Image 1 (cartoon, rainbow, N blue to C red):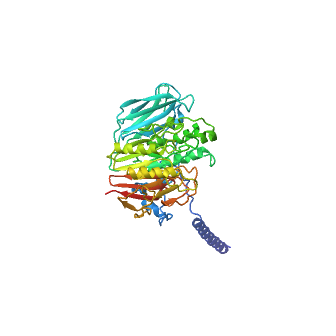
Image 2: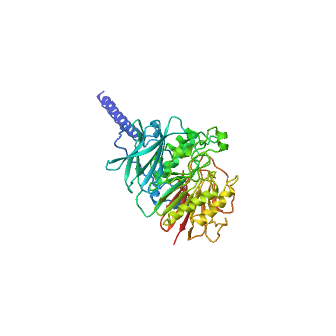
Image 3: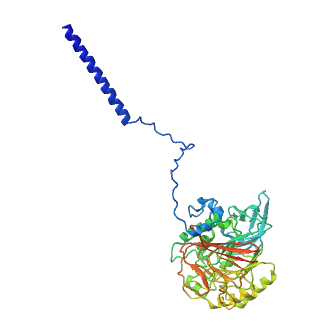
Amino acid sequence: MKKRKRTGNARVVFTSLILLVLVALGAWKLKSAHPKEQPPKQETADVQPPKAEPKEPVQEPEQPAEELKEPAELLDEPAKLAEFLPDYTSAPLLSTTPIKCLSMEVGANADELQFNWFSPSGAKGRVEWKDSSGNVKSFDAQCTASVTLPGYYVNKAKVTGLQAGETYGYRVGNDEAWSPEYTYQAPEDTESLTFLVTADAQVGQSEMEDPRETAERWDSVLTRLAGCVPEANFLFHLGDQVADFGNAEHYDLFLDHLALYRIPLAPVVGNHDVANDYSIEENGHPGGPYFFEHFFVPNRSNAGQSQYDTDGDYYFIRDNVLFIVLNSSTIQPAEVHEAYVAQIVSEHPEAKWRILVQHYPAYKGTTGSGNGSIKEYLARITIDNDIDLVLSAHDHAYSRTAFVNREMETLNDYDYASGDTVTNPEGTMYVTCGTSSGCLYHPIEEEIRIVYQGQPEVPSAIRIDVTDTELHLRTYLADTWTVYDEYTIRKE
Protein backbone atom coordinates (compact mmCIF):
# COMPACT_ATOMS: atom_id res chain seq x y z
CA MET A 1 0.00 0.00 0.00
CA LYS A 2 2.76 2.42 0.92
CA LYS A 3 4.66 1.54 -2.28
CA ARG A 4 1.66 2.41 -4.38
CA LYS A 5 1.21 5.65 -2.44
CA ARG A 6 4.78 6.79 -3.11
CA THR A 7 4.38 5.98 -6.80
CA GLY A 8 1.14 8.05 -6.99
CA ASN A 9 2.80 11.01 -5.27
CA ALA A 10 5.65 10.95 -7.74
CA ARG A 11 3.27 11.00 -10.63
CA VAL A 12 1.45 13.97 -9.12
CA VAL A 13 4.70 15.88 -8.62
CA PHE A 14 5.87 15.07 -12.15
CA THR A 15 2.54 16.16 -13.64
CA SER A 16 2.62 19.39 -11.63
CA LEU A 17 6.09 20.23 -12.91
CA ILE A 18 4.98 19.64 -16.49
CA LEU A 19 1.98 21.94 -15.99
CA LEU A 20 4.16 24.67 -14.45
CA VAL A 21 6.52 24.54 -17.43
CA LEU A 22 3.61 24.76 -19.87
CA VAL A 23 2.07 27.75 -18.00
CA ALA A 24 5.40 29.57 -17.93
CA LEU A 25 5.94 28.91 -21.64
CA GLY A 26 2.44 30.22 -22.46
CA ALA A 27 2.98 33.37 -20.41
CA TRP A 28 6.27 34.05 -22.18
CA LYS A 29 4.59 33.71 -25.58
CA LEU A 30 1.79 36.09 -24.54
CA LYS A 31 4.34 38.67 -23.38
CA SER A 32 6.14 38.48 -26.71
CA ALA A 33 2.95 38.90 -28.71
CA HIS A 34 1.63 41.87 -26.63
CA PRO A 35 4.30 44.29 -25.41
CA LYS A 36 3.69 46.20 -22.24
CA GLU A 37 1.17 49.01 -22.78
CA GLN A 38 2.71 52.49 -22.60
CA PRO A 39 1.15 55.09 -20.29
CA PRO A 40 -0.79 57.86 -22.07
CA LYS A 41 1.42 60.70 -23.42
CA GLN A 42 1.22 63.90 -21.37
CA GLU A 43 0.55 67.00 -23.57
CA THR A 44 2.40 70.18 -22.74
CA ALA A 45 2.44 73.62 -24.32
CA ASP A 46 6.09 74.15 -23.46
CA VAL A 47 7.82 71.00 -24.68
CA GLN A 48 7.13 69.32 -27.99
CA PRO A 49 8.76 66.07 -29.09
CA PRO A 50 11.20 66.53 -31.95
CA LYS A 51 9.88 65.60 -35.37
CA ALA A 52 11.62 62.77 -37.13
CA GLU A 53 13.54 63.96 -40.17
CA PRO A 54 12.81 62.13 -43.42
CA LYS A 55 15.63 59.91 -44.61
CA GLU A 56 15.53 61.55 -48.05
CA PRO A 57 14.76 65.21 -48.84
CA VAL A 58 11.27 65.93 -50.09
CA GLN A 59 11.33 66.85 -53.76
CA GLU A 60 9.97 70.35 -54.39
CA PRO A 61 7.88 70.91 -57.52
CA GLU A 62 9.89 72.18 -60.45
CA GLN A 63 9.97 75.97 -60.50
CA PRO A 64 9.62 78.10 -63.63
CA ALA A 65 12.86 79.46 -65.05
CA GLU A 66 11.79 82.99 -64.13
CA GLU A 67 12.08 82.17 -60.41
CA LEU A 68 15.86 82.02 -60.80
CA LYS A 69 15.75 85.81 -61.14
CA GLU A 70 14.26 86.34 -57.68
CA PRO A 71 15.87 88.86 -55.34
CA ALA A 72 18.27 87.17 -52.93
CA GLU A 73 16.43 88.43 -49.85
CA LEU A 74 13.29 86.53 -50.87
CA LEU A 75 15.13 83.25 -51.23
CA ASP A 76 16.21 83.57 -47.60
CA GLU A 77 12.60 83.98 -46.44
CA PRO A 78 10.41 81.46 -48.29
CA ALA A 79 7.68 81.90 -45.69
CA LYS A 80 6.84 85.25 -47.29
CA LEU A 81 5.72 83.45 -50.41
CA ALA A 82 3.81 80.64 -48.72
CA GLU A 83 0.46 82.44 -48.72
CA PHE A 84 -1.10 85.20 -50.78
CA LEU A 85 -3.32 86.79 -48.16
CA PRO A 86 -4.66 90.21 -47.17
CA ASP A 87 -3.59 92.01 -43.99
CA TYR A 88 -6.40 93.43 -41.89
CA THR A 89 -4.93 92.72 -38.46
CA SER A 90 -1.45 94.20 -38.00
CA ALA A 91 -2.92 97.64 -37.19
CA PRO A 92 -6.39 99.14 -36.76
CA LEU A 93 -8.12 99.92 -40.04
CA LEU A 94 -9.17 103.48 -40.73
CA SER A 95 -12.81 102.32 -40.79
CA THR A 96 -12.67 101.95 -37.00
CA THR A 97 -12.82 105.78 -36.73
CA PRO A 98 -15.01 108.56 -38.19
CA ILE A 99 -12.14 109.62 -40.50
CA LYS A 100 -12.60 108.43 -44.11
CA CYS A 101 -10.44 107.88 -47.19
CA LEU A 102 -7.00 108.68 -45.79
CA SER A 103 -4.39 108.73 -48.55
CA MET A 104 -0.65 109.38 -48.17
CA GLU A 105 0.83 110.82 -51.37
CA VAL A 106 4.35 111.48 -52.57
CA GLY A 107 5.77 114.92 -51.93
CA ALA A 108 7.57 117.13 -54.39
CA ASN A 109 10.90 115.96 -52.93
CA ALA A 110 12.14 113.04 -50.83
CA ASP A 111 11.81 114.98 -47.56
CA GLU A 112 8.07 115.63 -48.04
CA LEU A 113 4.80 113.71 -47.81
CA GLN A 114 1.26 114.87 -48.57
CA PHE A 115 -1.91 113.68 -46.82
CA ASN A 116 -5.55 113.79 -47.82
CA TRP A 117 -8.58 112.71 -45.75
CA PHE A 118 -12.28 113.30 -45.10
CA SER A 119 -13.48 114.39 -41.66
CA PRO A 120 -17.04 114.75 -40.34
CA SER A 121 -15.91 117.91 -38.51
CA GLY A 122 -15.44 121.30 -40.13
CA ALA A 123 -12.68 122.18 -37.65
CA LYS A 124 -9.27 122.48 -39.29
CA GLY A 125 -7.47 119.15 -39.31
CA ARG A 126 -3.79 118.43 -38.76
CA VAL A 127 -1.18 115.70 -38.98
CA GLU A 128 0.52 114.83 -35.69
CA TRP A 129 3.97 113.57 -36.63
CA LYS A 130 6.18 111.79 -34.07
CA ASP A 131 9.82 110.78 -34.60
CA SER A 132 11.58 107.82 -32.97
CA SER A 133 12.72 110.01 -30.05
CA GLY A 134 9.12 110.91 -29.21
CA ASN A 135 9.26 114.47 -30.52
CA VAL A 136 5.90 115.51 -32.00
CA LYS A 137 5.31 118.10 -34.72
CA SER A 138 1.94 119.27 -35.94
CA PHE A 139 1.21 120.15 -39.58
CA ASP A 140 -2.02 122.04 -40.26
CA ALA A 141 -4.36 121.07 -43.10
CA GLN A 142 -6.37 123.15 -45.51
CA CYS A 143 -9.99 122.25 -44.76
CA THR A 144 -12.96 122.78 -47.08
CA ALA A 145 -16.47 121.36 -47.26
CA SER A 146 -16.62 118.40 -49.63
CA VAL A 147 -18.49 118.81 -52.89
CA THR A 148 -18.66 115.08 -53.57
CA LEU A 149 -19.33 113.59 -50.09
CA PRO A 150 -22.12 115.50 -48.30
CA GLY A 151 -21.56 116.15 -44.61
CA TYR A 152 -17.79 115.72 -44.82
CA TYR A 153 -14.81 118.05 -45.07
CA VAL A 154 -11.70 117.54 -47.21
CA ASN A 155 -8.36 118.03 -45.45
CA LYS A 156 -5.04 118.42 -47.27
CA ALA A 157 -1.77 118.67 -45.33
CA LYS A 158 1.93 118.58 -46.20
CA VAL A 159 4.58 117.08 -43.90
CA THR A 160 8.14 118.34 -44.39
CA GLY A 161 11.60 117.74 -42.94
CA LEU A 162 11.70 113.93 -43.23
CA GLN A 163 15.05 112.30 -42.43
CA ALA A 164 16.25 109.30 -44.45
CA GLY A 165 15.89 106.02 -42.57
CA GLU A 166 13.92 107.53 -39.69
CA THR A 167 10.78 105.81 -38.39
CA TYR A 168 7.76 107.98 -37.62
CA GLY A 169 4.36 107.54 -36.06
CA TYR A 170 1.46 109.67 -37.25
CA ARG A 171 -2.27 110.27 -37.05
CA VAL A 172 -4.60 112.71 -38.80
CA GLY A 173 -7.76 114.51 -37.75
CA ASN A 174 -8.72 117.04 -35.10
CA ASP A 175 -9.85 116.98 -31.47
CA GLU A 176 -13.31 115.85 -32.51
CA ALA A 177 -12.11 112.79 -34.50
CA TRP A 178 -8.72 111.16 -35.03
CA SER A 179 -7.50 108.33 -37.22
CA PRO A 180 -5.59 105.41 -35.68
CA GLU A 181 -1.84 105.95 -35.37
CA TYR A 182 0.20 104.47 -38.20
CA THR A 183 3.92 103.99 -38.81
CA TYR A 184 5.99 105.30 -41.69
CA GLN A 185 9.68 104.61 -42.29
CA ALA A 186 11.43 107.09 -44.56
CA PRO A 187 13.58 105.30 -47.19
CA GLU A 188 17.28 104.91 -46.57
CA ASP A 189 19.65 107.15 -48.51
CA THR A 190 21.14 104.68 -51.00
CA GLU A 191 22.65 104.75 -54.47
CA SER A 192 19.57 103.07 -55.94
CA LEU A 193 16.01 104.37 -56.16
CA THR A 194 13.37 101.63 -55.93
CA PHE A 195 9.70 102.21 -56.68
CA LEU A 196 6.65 100.09 -57.50
CA VAL A 197 4.03 100.29 -60.23
CA THR A 198 0.43 99.04 -60.03
CA ALA A 199 -2.59 99.74 -62.18
CA ASP A 200 -6.32 99.29 -62.71
CA ALA A 201 -7.41 98.11 -59.28
CA GLN A 202 -10.76 99.41 -60.53
CA VAL A 203 -12.51 98.34 -57.34
CA GLY A 204 -16.23 97.96 -57.98
CA GLN A 205 -16.13 96.27 -61.38
CA SER A 206 -19.46 94.69 -60.47
CA GLU A 207 -19.90 92.89 -63.78
CA MET A 208 -17.23 90.45 -62.65
CA GLU A 209 -17.53 90.03 -58.86
CA ASP A 210 -18.52 91.62 -55.57
CA PRO A 211 -16.38 94.75 -54.93
CA ARG A 212 -15.26 93.34 -51.58
CA GLU A 213 -13.69 90.36 -53.34
CA THR A 214 -11.70 92.68 -55.59
CA ALA A 215 -10.70 94.79 -52.58
CA GLU A 216 -9.46 91.73 -50.71
CA ARG A 217 -7.29 90.61 -53.63
CA TRP A 218 -6.03 94.21 -54.00
CA ASP A 219 -5.09 94.09 -50.31
CA SER A 220 -3.23 90.82 -50.88
CA VAL A 221 -1.22 92.46 -53.67
CA LEU A 222 -0.40 95.49 -51.50
CA THR A 223 0.59 93.26 -48.60
CA ARG A 224 2.89 91.24 -50.85
CA LEU A 225 4.52 94.39 -52.28
CA ALA A 226 5.10 95.86 -48.83
CA GLY A 227 6.58 92.59 -47.59
CA CYS A 228 8.74 91.75 -50.60
CA VAL A 229 9.98 95.26 -51.45
CA PRO A 230 10.16 97.13 -48.12
CA GLU A 231 12.83 99.43 -49.57
CA ALA A 232 10.40 100.88 -52.14
CA ASN A 233 10.21 104.68 -51.99
CA PHE A 234 6.66 104.96 -53.32
CA LEU A 235 3.91 103.21 -55.25
CA PHE A 236 2.42 104.34 -58.55
CA HIS A 237 -1.15 103.44 -59.28
CA LEU A 238 -1.62 104.21 -62.97
CA GLY A 239 -5.30 105.07 -62.95
CA ASP A 240 -8.78 103.59 -62.59
CA GLN A 241 -8.56 103.47 -58.83
CA VAL A 242 -12.31 102.80 -58.77
CA ALA A 243 -14.87 101.49 -61.24
CA ASP A 244 -17.41 104.28 -60.58
CA PHE A 245 -16.01 107.79 -60.11
CA GLY A 246 -18.89 108.82 -57.79
CA ASN A 247 -19.20 105.72 -55.61
CA ALA A 248 -18.04 106.40 -52.05
CA GLU A 249 -17.88 102.68 -51.20
CA HIS A 250 -15.49 102.04 -54.08
CA TYR A 251 -13.08 104.67 -52.74
CA ASP A 252 -13.26 103.17 -49.25
CA LEU A 253 -12.46 99.74 -50.66
CA PHE A 254 -9.56 101.08 -52.72
CA LEU A 255 -7.95 103.15 -49.95
CA ASP A 256 -8.64 101.37 -46.67
CA HIS A 257 -5.57 99.12 -46.66
CA LEU A 258 -2.79 99.11 -44.10
CA ALA A 259 -0.03 98.92 -46.72
CA LEU A 260 -1.17 102.25 -48.21
CA TYR A 261 -0.55 103.92 -44.84
CA ARG A 262 3.09 102.77 -44.97
CA ILE A 263 4.10 103.62 -48.53
CA PRO A 264 3.34 106.90 -50.35
CA LEU A 265 0.99 106.70 -53.33
CA ALA A 266 1.46 108.43 -56.67
CA PRO A 267 -2.06 108.24 -58.17
CA VAL A 268 -2.84 108.80 -61.85
CA VAL A 269 -6.14 109.95 -63.35
CA GLY A 270 -7.92 107.13 -65.18
CA ASN A 271 -11.05 107.21 -67.28
CA HIS A 272 -13.07 105.61 -64.44
CA ASP A 273 -11.86 108.22 -61.92
CA VAL A 274 -13.39 111.33 -63.45
CA ALA A 275 -16.77 112.30 -64.80
CA ASN A 276 -17.61 112.95 -68.43
CA ASP A 277 -20.94 113.34 -70.19
CA TYR A 278 -21.17 109.60 -70.90
CA SER A 279 -20.25 108.40 -67.40
CA ILE A 280 -22.56 110.90 -65.73
CA GLU A 281 -25.49 109.47 -67.67
CA GLU A 282 -24.28 105.88 -67.23
CA ASN A 283 -23.60 106.02 -63.46
CA GLY A 284 -26.13 108.62 -62.41
CA HIS A 285 -23.74 110.80 -60.40
CA PRO A 286 -23.22 114.52 -60.92
CA GLY A 287 -19.89 115.79 -62.19
CA GLY A 288 -17.47 117.01 -59.56
CA PRO A 289 -13.86 117.00 -58.32
CA TYR A 290 -13.81 113.37 -57.16
CA PHE A 291 -10.17 112.65 -57.95
CA PHE A 292 -9.06 116.02 -56.56
CA GLU A 293 -10.96 115.53 -53.29
CA HIS A 294 -9.48 112.06 -52.68
CA PHE A 295 -5.82 112.74 -53.56
CA PHE A 296 -3.30 115.51 -52.83
CA VAL A 297 -0.60 115.39 -55.50
CA PRO A 298 2.51 117.62 -55.57
CA ASN A 299 3.12 120.45 -58.03
CA ARG A 300 -0.39 120.16 -59.43
CA SER A 301 -0.84 122.24 -62.58
CA ASN A 302 -3.85 124.25 -63.68
CA ALA A 303 -3.29 122.85 -67.15
CA GLY A 304 -4.52 119.41 -68.12
CA GLN A 305 -7.64 119.47 -65.97
CA SER A 306 -10.58 117.20 -66.75
CA GLN A 307 -13.99 118.42 -67.81
CA TYR A 308 -15.57 118.22 -64.33
CA ASP A 309 -12.49 117.84 -62.13
CA THR A 310 -9.53 120.04 -61.13
CA ASP A 311 -6.82 117.39 -61.07
CA GLY A 312 -4.38 118.55 -63.77
CA ASP A 313 -0.86 117.26 -64.46
CA TYR A 314 1.88 117.03 -61.81
CA TYR A 315 5.53 116.11 -61.30
CA PHE A 316 8.00 115.19 -58.56
CA ILE A 317 11.69 114.37 -58.24
CA ARG A 318 13.44 111.48 -56.51
CA ASP A 319 17.23 111.31 -56.57
CA ASN A 320 18.24 111.78 -60.21
CA VAL A 321 14.83 110.86 -61.67
CA LEU A 322 12.19 113.32 -62.90
CA PHE A 323 8.65 111.89 -62.91
CA ILE A 324 6.02 113.71 -64.98
CA VAL A 325 2.40 112.55 -64.60
CA LEU A 326 -0.14 113.52 -67.26
CA ASN A 327 -3.91 113.48 -67.06
CA SER A 328 -4.81 111.61 -70.24
CA SER A 329 -8.55 111.85 -69.41
CA THR A 330 -8.57 115.59 -69.95
CA ILE A 331 -10.52 117.62 -72.49
CA GLN A 332 -7.48 119.86 -72.91
CA PRO A 333 -5.76 119.73 -76.32
CA ALA A 334 -2.50 117.82 -76.75
CA GLU A 335 -0.57 121.08 -77.03
CA VAL A 336 -1.28 121.73 -73.34
CA HIS A 337 0.56 118.57 -72.30
CA GLU A 338 3.38 119.18 -74.77
CA ALA A 339 4.00 122.65 -73.40
CA TYR A 340 3.78 121.41 -69.81
CA VAL A 341 6.35 118.63 -70.26
CA ALA A 342 8.75 120.94 -72.09
CA GLN A 343 8.50 123.49 -69.29
CA ILE A 344 9.11 120.98 -66.46
CA VAL A 345 12.04 119.37 -68.27
CA SER A 346 13.65 122.77 -68.89
CA GLU A 347 13.31 123.64 -65.20
CA HIS A 348 15.09 120.45 -64.11
CA PRO A 349 18.05 119.87 -66.44
CA GLU A 350 19.93 118.02 -63.68
CA ALA A 351 17.68 114.95 -63.91
CA LYS A 352 19.56 112.06 -65.48
CA TRP A 353 16.44 109.93 -66.04
CA ARG A 354 13.03 111.12 -67.21
CA ILE A 355 9.93 108.98 -66.80
CA LEU A 356 6.53 109.95 -68.19
CA VAL A 357 3.37 108.47 -66.68
CA GLN A 358 -0.28 108.47 -67.78
CA HIS A 359 -3.28 106.13 -67.80
CA TYR A 360 -3.93 105.60 -71.52
CA PRO A 361 -1.24 103.68 -73.43
CA ALA A 362 0.14 105.01 -76.68
CA TYR A 363 0.21 101.54 -78.26
CA LYS A 364 -2.77 99.44 -77.31
CA GLY A 365 -2.09 95.73 -76.80
CA THR A 366 -5.64 94.48 -76.27
CA THR A 367 -8.84 94.32 -78.27
CA GLY A 368 -10.81 97.53 -78.63
CA SER A 369 -10.26 100.91 -80.19
CA GLY A 370 -7.11 102.90 -79.53
CA ASN A 371 -6.47 106.61 -79.43
CA GLY A 372 -4.42 107.85 -82.36
CA SER A 373 -3.96 111.37 -81.02
CA ILE A 374 -2.35 110.06 -77.80
CA LYS A 375 0.05 107.95 -79.84
CA GLU A 376 1.06 110.94 -81.92
CA TYR A 377 1.52 113.57 -79.20
CA LEU A 378 3.41 111.16 -76.93
CA ALA A 379 5.83 110.42 -79.77
CA ARG A 380 6.54 114.14 -80.06
CA ILE A 381 6.76 114.70 -76.29
CA THR A 382 9.05 111.76 -75.58
CA ILE A 383 11.60 112.41 -78.31
CA ASP A 384 11.63 116.20 -78.00
CA ASN A 385 12.26 115.94 -74.25
CA ASP A 386 14.53 112.86 -74.10
CA ILE A 387 12.05 110.73 -72.13
CA ASP A 388 13.54 107.33 -71.27
CA LEU A 389 10.40 105.40 -70.32
CA VAL A 390 6.61 105.79 -70.51
CA LEU A 391 4.44 103.93 -68.00
CA SER A 392 0.76 103.38 -68.79
CA ALA A 393 -2.21 101.15 -67.94
CA HIS A 394 -5.84 100.74 -69.12
CA ASP A 395 -5.31 97.52 -71.12
CA HIS A 396 -5.59 95.13 -68.13
CA ALA A 397 -2.77 93.19 -69.81
CA TYR A 398 1.02 93.56 -69.85
CA SER A 399 3.08 94.86 -72.77
CA ARG A 400 6.50 96.34 -73.55
CA THR A 401 7.34 98.08 -76.81
CA ALA A 402 10.54 98.43 -78.76
CA PHE A 403 12.25 101.80 -78.62
CA VAL A 404 10.12 104.11 -80.75
CA ASN A 405 11.17 107.29 -82.58
CA ARG A 406 9.30 110.52 -83.27
CA GLU A 407 7.68 109.05 -86.37
CA MET A 408 6.28 106.18 -84.26
CA GLU A 409 8.66 103.71 -85.94
CA THR A 410 10.38 100.92 -84.06
CA LEU A 411 14.16 100.93 -83.79
CA ASN A 412 15.21 97.38 -84.61
CA ASP A 413 18.92 97.53 -83.77
CA TYR A 414 18.41 96.41 -80.16
CA ASP A 415 17.75 93.13 -78.35
CA TYR A 416 14.26 93.00 -76.87
CA ALA A 417 13.98 89.55 -75.30
CA SER A 418 13.05 89.34 -71.64
CA GLY A 419 16.19 89.66 -69.52
CA ASP A 420 18.15 91.62 -72.13
CA THR A 421 20.16 94.78 -71.48
CA VAL A 422 20.55 97.68 -73.90
CA THR A 423 23.14 100.46 -73.69
CA ASN A 424 22.52 104.08 -74.71
CA PRO A 425 19.42 103.42 -76.82
CA GLU A 426 17.74 106.03 -78.95
CA GLY A 427 14.00 106.47 -78.87
CA THR A 428 11.63 105.73 -75.98
CA MET A 429 10.27 102.49 -74.52
CA TYR A 430 6.59 102.19 -73.49
CA VAL A 431 5.48 99.73 -70.79
CA THR A 432 1.85 98.98 -69.93
CA CYS A 433 1.15 97.46 -66.52
CA GLY A 434 -1.57 94.82 -66.23
CA THR A 435 -4.34 94.96 -63.64
CA SER A 436 -3.06 94.70 -60.08
CA SER A 437 -6.36 93.53 -58.61
CA GLY A 438 -7.47 90.99 -61.19
CA CYS A 439 -10.79 92.78 -61.52
CA LEU A 440 -11.02 92.18 -65.27
CA TYR A 441 -8.72 90.63 -67.91
CA HIS A 442 -8.78 91.72 -71.55
CA PRO A 443 -7.57 89.45 -74.38
CA ILE A 444 -4.39 90.64 -76.09
CA GLU A 445 -3.91 91.49 -79.73
CA GLU A 446 -0.79 92.23 -81.72
CA GLU A 447 0.55 95.75 -82.20
CA ILE A 448 3.57 96.24 -84.47
CA ARG A 449 5.56 98.22 -81.90
CA ILE A 450 4.98 95.78 -79.02
CA VAL A 451 7.82 93.27 -78.64
CA TYR A 452 6.74 91.55 -75.42
CA GLN A 453 3.19 91.07 -74.15
CA GLY A 454 0.92 88.64 -72.36
CA GLN A 455 -2.25 88.06 -70.41
CA PRO A 456 -1.33 85.87 -67.41
CA GLU A 457 -4.80 86.33 -65.85
CA VAL A 458 -3.38 86.98 -62.40
CA PRO A 459 -2.68 90.34 -60.70
CA SER A 460 0.65 91.87 -61.67
CA ALA A 461 2.92 94.68 -60.53
CA ILE A 462 6.25 96.19 -61.59
CA ARG A 463 9.40 96.91 -59.60
CA ILE A 464 11.85 99.45 -61.02
CA ASP A 465 15.36 100.14 -59.66
CA VAL A 466 17.27 103.18 -60.93
CA THR A 467 20.91 104.15 -60.40
CA ASP A 468 23.03 106.79 -62.15
CA THR A 469 23.83 104.32 -64.92
CA GLU A 470 21.02 101.78 -65.01
CA LEU A 471 17.24 101.38 -65.04
CA HIS A 472 16.17 97.82 -64.25
CA LEU A 473 12.51 96.85 -64.72
CA ARG A 474 10.99 93.64 -63.37
CA THR A 475 7.34 92.69 -63.81
CA TYR A 476 5.96 90.20 -61.27
CA LEU A 477 2.97 87.91 -61.06
CA ALA A 478 1.86 89.01 -57.62
CA ASP A 479 0.34 85.78 -56.34
CA THR A 480 3.52 83.69 -56.77
CA TRP A 481 6.00 86.60 -56.92
CA THR A 482 7.36 85.16 -60.14
CA VAL A 483 9.24 87.35 -62.61
CA TYR A 484 7.10 87.62 -65.74
CA ASP A 485 9.36 90.00 -67.68
CA GLU A 486 12.47 92.08 -67.06
CA TYR A 487 14.55 94.51 -69.03
CA THR A 488 17.50 96.83 -68.35
CA ILE A 489 18.42 100.19 -69.90
CA ARG A 490 22.00 101.29 -69.30
CA LYS A 491 23.54 104.72 -69.80
CA GLU A 492 27.28 105.10 -70.29
